[in-house]
Every structure is written in C-alpha cells, then in structure tokens.
Image (cartoon, rainbow, N blue to C red; front, side, top):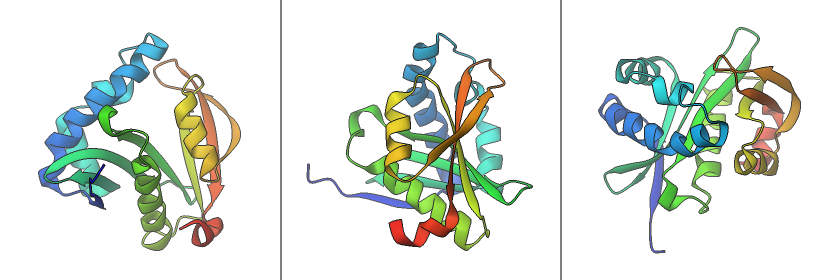
Length: 165
C-alpha cells in the first residue's frame, strides 16, 4: 500500500480528530446492536480532551490524519482497562489495531505499572474478538454495558507482554 502509519501518544491537538474518528468508526458497531447510544457515540469533545490529559491515549497517524486510536487507564485493582480501540474503516485489516493495542499495553505496563490488561467488547463484535484473541486475550466473563449491550470481558497478564512486543 506504500503507506507509513506511525503510532504515538495523543496530544491535545488530536482531540477533535479522535472525536470525529470514533464517531465514524463506531457507527457500524451501533448498527450491529441497533443501539446508537453507545458510549463512543455520545461522548463529548470535552470528555475526549479530559481522557487525553489523564489517561493513556495513543493515535495512529497517516501523514497529518489521525486514522486510529485507543485509550487505557489503570483501575483500582491494578488492572488496566483498555477501550475505544478504533481504526478508520478504509484502513482496517492492516494490523493498525494490533499496533495501537501493543503501544497502549507497553505504556500501561511500563509507565503505569499495570499487572493485567482488561478489555470489553460487544458479544456480536466478531472482528474485535478475533483480534483480541490473536494477541493473547482470553475471555474471563461477561458484563452488561451501561447502554444495555451484553459485553464479553477479556484479560491478558501484563507479564506476557515482553514476549509479544
């Protein structure tokens, strides 16, 4: 494809592009569940800015365009919760999601001391589940999303990180 996509920590300047990108990316997810109130679609721009300031947020860039993003934060139990992973529809299938995930995992384990990584994905989101399993996540349970969507909870030990990076 001759495209060079770079992964880096998000800055405040990226907030608007992240906001627009997740709105675009999560339309297909919303359609899958017939639910347009899912968090990435109702999140405000200010809330995205707050996450960039406080959480671990990475972006994939193609030139000046943000074409992918992921967010993570360490929770009370020492696990890192990773979410809102998305890649622009026209660039899916090139391994960008896996690269974003690895960048977030490395930062969360390295800088923030996470012992485990945790992800939630909707029960019908086959492509997400395939990606997560391929990079070492295992299903540990289910949960009900705040929006009513049944979620599958997956985890991976941070110790396994060094071998997959």
